Amino acid sequence: MKTITAPYKIKGGVHPAYRKELAREQAIRTMPVPSLLRVSMAQHLGAPAKPLVKKGDTVLRGQRIGEPAGFISASVHASVSGTVKAVGPAPTASGAMAMAVDIEPDGNDTWLEQLTPQPNWSALDAKTLTGIVAEAGVAGMGGAGFPTNVKLSPPPDKPIDTLIVNGAECEPYLTADERLMRERPEQVWTGIAILRHILGAKIVRVAIEDNKPDAIRAMKKAMADAEGDVALVVLPASYPQGAEKQQIYGITGRETPSGGLPMDVGCLVENVGTCLAVQDAVVNGRPLTERVTTVTGDPVAEPGNVLNRIGTPYADLIAFCGGLRGSVAKVISGGPMMGFAQGSLDGATAKTTSGLLALAPGQAPVYESLACISCGRCVQACPMGLLPCELSQALEAEDYDLADAFHVMDCIECGCCAYVCPARRPLVQHMRTGKARIALKRREAMQKK
Ligand code: SF4
Ligand code: SF4
Image (cartoon, rainbow, N blue to C red):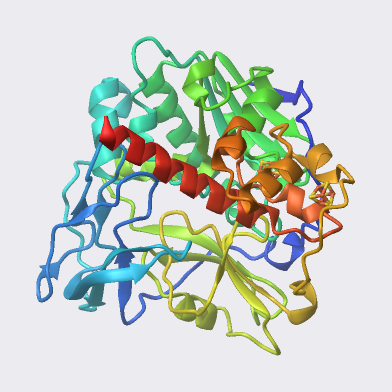
């Protein structure tokens, strides 16, 4: 095992105030089970899962309550034992509606021993292990939620030679991944080793920003005896250093093609939380029913990193952290750059809920958007090499063909352009809406064929 610095510099990016000091030194606390859990069927990228239970059913923790509804989809499991109180539509963090299962805990928290623990996992083949990961409903926990078993099954003409483990956590305020690396480095490393074994990847890179020295130390120790081409890569702290395509470039110099996937350049990127979930699924036979979420921001009385059951209402999570004090301008699911502003605290945690952030009025000012002054700052900041100003104007004019030609679908919604824009243009909202419209147009065109 060696330690190296990132050999390539990513394009663009910004240096926002990181504000990680609010939660960084708070050890992970386990939250008691709330009185009701709302488990969404749309916690992953792709088709939402199909509910397998109905009102009045009793369920055990770890029982599958949603089955994958397509190739890119994932199983969903009950995060507590209890009674199903309702099955119906509920808003997800992004505001989209999806089916959810409300479970009232029975107080026993009884597990359904559905998966067999495999402590001797290295004797198993890739197909068996990938099947366990699929059964456990593991999906990318860094925010994207891509079903992990799908990533682990590349077509034969796209072999993966490099496994990159993303411990950058470049999003301001969030510290859940840092705490996992500091507190559970051995388990994280076991998850990495399982992924390496499945992929047969020759090269393993664990990427951590240089502003997390304790996490670097802990992971180095856990990886010390690793054999082969394994390295801990120290990345310069900048945003969005943890974005998939940027990380691949920064570490390998390989450029993922427009519209392409990491597998197109022989790479697979997984977040450290996902590696831990893989370890838990394989070694302990436990489906994904909990995660660590950073609950933070100046209005939060006791910011921290909370191990919570998936489906925990935001209001309960905030209450566990001492509640909110003073005025609150905004609550965001995720971080300030890529998260989703919430209209209320009625939402609930999902596999992808890395953070819940409350901002005070001065920290979330409402600006009037002005006309573009063609300063070019957004172009310099865009890590994808796009022209956010041109894209925004095309999308405002509803010229989706032009925006598509300008590669809006390559936008990773990182928010760097909006962060630097002196005219306060709602660039990310334009990109998000435009991408959704173009995706819909493409789907409609496919259906007509
Ligand atoms: S256009 Fe997209 S990728 Fe580029 S800076 Fe803006 S949000 Fe990020
Ligand atoms: S940063 Fe804002 S004002 Fe400047 S070119 Fe981009 S959109 Fe226009």
